[in-house]
Image 1 (tube, rainbow, N blue to C red):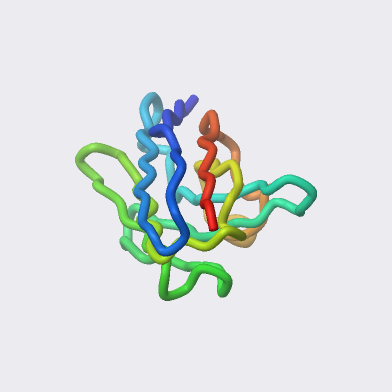
Image 2: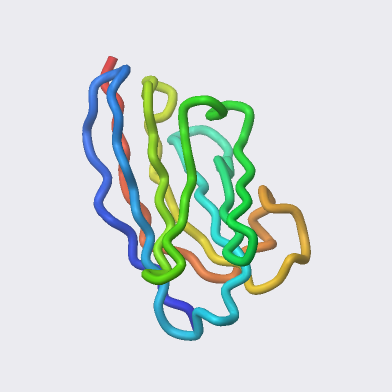
Length: 125
C-alpha cells in the first residue's frame, strides 16, 4: 500500500502562483511514478503531468505547458506541482496519484493505483 497526503489548495488571483505537494508513504519502493490530475465541475478529469522517480523525467499536458512545473524530492518521496500564471480555467480539485508500473499512458486514470485526498484550487478572475 502507498499512502498519498496532499497539501491544501487555495484561492489565488488570476496570474498568481500556487504550489501543491504530495507526500508518499508506505511501500514507496513500488512507486514508479506519480501524477497530478484535476477535476473541474462539469468537465472531464484531466491529467496535467507526471513525474517518474528513477529518471526524474516529466510530462505535461499541453494546457499547462510553460505554466506548471512538476518536480520531486526523492529523499522525501514528495512530488510538487508549481503552478504559475494561473487562469480561471485552472480552477479545479487537484489530485495526486501514484503508479506502480510503467504500464499504460501517463495521462490515463487506469494507470494509477493510489490517490491523494484532493485539494481545491480556485482562481479568481
